[in-house]
Amino acid sequence: DTMNQIRPDVSTICVGLAASMGAFLLSAGMKGKRMSLPHSRIMIHQPLGGAQGQATDIEIQAKEILYHKQRLNELLASHTSQPLERIQEDTERDFFMSSNEAMEYGLIDQVINRRPSASQPISVVN
Image 1: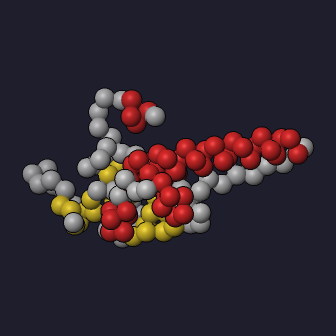
Image 2: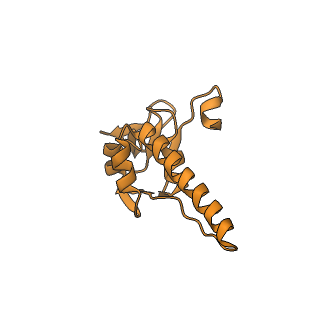
């Protein structure tokens, strides 16, 4: 929510690994400004959680994690332009991608090819 409320565009860059909520936040950057280094890995999956206590407490926690699962899937579908059904299927288990695969999936927009300089913008692999 905060990334969408502030005035400046938010650039996101994956350096090494963006997994779980890290991958979600990577995808939530401003479209056109979501990047990854070429050998980084990106992984999406469903929320993890645990519950203990009385049966009613476990039920409350289960409902809450299912709520978060649905909401995060809806947002990830919006960030990537993937159908919700594909997001639901892909996040059932750990789903790892290369930078190029993540770009094809819609999680990022650019793969950074070389170090930028003050006089040259970031070079990307398309």
